Figure 1: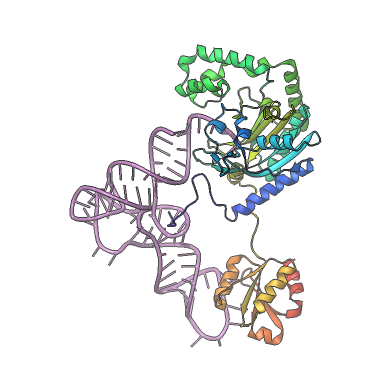
Figure 2: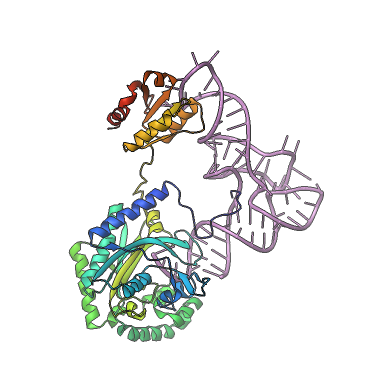
Length: 419
RNA sequence: GUGGCCGUAGCUCAGUUGGUUAGAGCGCCAGGUUGUGAUCCUGGAUGUCGGGGGUUCGAAUCCCCUCGGUCACCCCA
């Protein structure tokens, strides 16, 4: 394309206006919702000791294939974070907080994937985590936070899938049953599914290949293997969602990509995104993760939402439109002095969005720029105005009206015209 | 990582069976007499046709490699 020596690397892109502002607004909106729900912000580093992430589960692709890992000049093995949860757990282990600790975050993560629509190597997430409570009501609260966020954006076509992945003790029993089942049907499975079966039988359930899906549909279901405790917790979660009026579908074959999840798992998808990457976000409970990272045996639950995909869904649904970035006033200065400089500064100090042209452009060119900028008012100041202590005020809507105003009262004049 | 499709000005695209100085619309810039936009008229600038190699008298058009994008698988946000 455009001839330039360097381009942004695969899977990365440059956010320009109006997308950049929209991006910020989205994060701001999430921040408000999270704060209202009692979450404080956390800003962990973007890279950690590689071990922090490896403990997420070596069977997952996120860790085994997609980690941006390298050695720094001090010989440390470090990795760019592929997600936030592990960092949050590490932070808690390092700086103990009063429990339950509720925290939210926003920022980029990195995965060495093959880029696709809605899938980037550097991608942004907003998310929240709660450490130190087993209460299923917290699970409900997390889902409610995400749900409220989507609603505030104007996304109405979000679907919620929930499942329970059981406790650490339930899992092995289920995995055995699953393994037996798939082994007995091995001849019907794709080669890839058989590969997956070796490293992580759970994920075979998730296969989108038609042949695999048929077999998976008949596979034993995790819900039948839950301990009494886990079952009760799951019931409580479902009852909580009902109580809040949040619609959901139980998805017995929902498994999440990272291995650390226990009990509640959930995922949000958008019907507006017909692409394969239609998952807006997801999360669940990770009751063994902190201990696994060398911390105390505290339970945790959290979720992350993909900012890029959410924005894509907003585009598809035509909601959460970009805000107007236009200046309110354009100063057209054709004097040799510093009138333009002073006038713009005065307007800005008064909280009015104002801008101007540079490089001594002709009045016609400056008026053109004023029009293009979307400003409602053009303030014209030339030798005549300077001499008479006035400013010409021109409204830019339609054919435009022009009048003269006293230089000393210009801010007031502009304010009254804008209101 | 595997496979399909695509890659021409800032943007959206056209470019006929390979044939002379590569086009359109939008955008941008400048004019249409003295200091006035959006409309209208006129003129102008910008592309090593993603990059490299090959076939050919001749390639944006054919072949190979490569880079990038996109879609599906995979994976996931």
